[in-house]
Length: 115
Image (cartoon, rainbow, N blue to C red; front, side):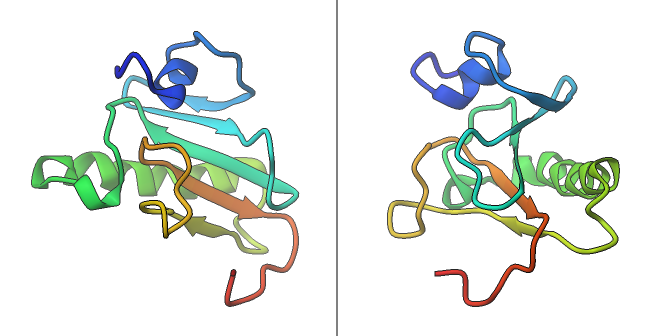
């Protein structure tokens, strides 16, 4: 855990969140400023800054993260109608918390391009 990281603190239970899923490697919670009716953030407990800093050793963890996203969509009842998975990477990519996180967005028609 990075002691200064907001998402590490959330995953550790030091900052309250509305948990959706939790295991030894992953943590999912509802976004406090949702961009869609359903907006869940899925993070690895391992502190990784962004997609740009992923290493080969992270491939299995990230594969499990993507599979968990599908299971969360099923659990939340959004898999059938559709959902969007987004990684914002770096400042120009819109990343505001520097701990890799997957946005799971659903509950309305999501247009393209997003912004």
